[in-house]
Length: 285
Image (tube, rainbow, N blue to C red; front, top):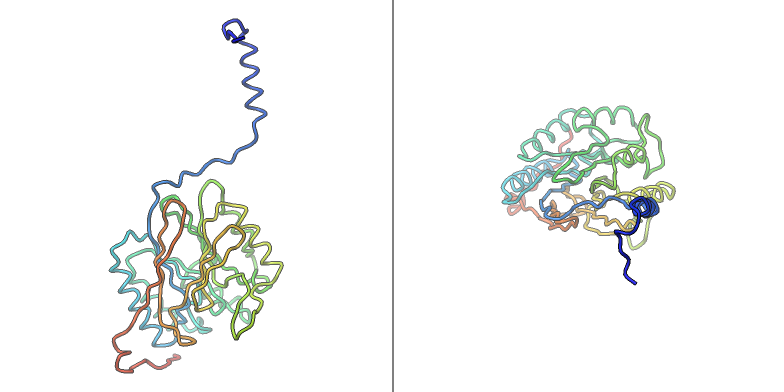
């Protein structure tokens, strides 16, 4: 028989509604990721100190500045220098080239920037030229987080800095994030065999933290080659290098962010002087 609501006391109706709301399971707020579309650039492993590498970065800056795209920023994922960050002439020359970019640039420290054998001095020098060990910027409602993870990867302590604690203070389920760091956490394959990358304890904690929050992707460098992995449900994109080590052609990446999904295009550069065999030689000032 149909129920006539007009015959039910209003107090009973209200109490029923309140009970229904109280007993409903907690639901995480949904993030509106529709109609979000933009581009950003990744460069990595410039290894400043080699004249060839300075020239490669100059070419990349020239090309990136001419891109006909809605580029929000450039992120450098580490090894800006090459065990020579304490030489002011090298750090300042590299920075002066990158400062020619017409887009904001954010930096990650790599293992050849802040060195385990001289943590205090190299950390101070990196922060002097390239900024803090962890940063966060927002573009189109997406958090771009750069974080120095070498202590976590290599199992050492850095005074006053814990990458997991610092990162968790930034990540959220209310806002999507993209995380940039240097050394990828999965095992490394080279010379026809697999090699450990991160310390096991650091690896597990890292993946748990990334999957706890709304992390859309992780970007890294270090390997000087293109790779793609999954950290639980979070994709990891490893970019090839600007530097020429192991015969690499200089490259950078254009990422496209569309409604919560990330894709990329790798762009390779060629310097005119290479055609005549005039590759610059090493310079260590």
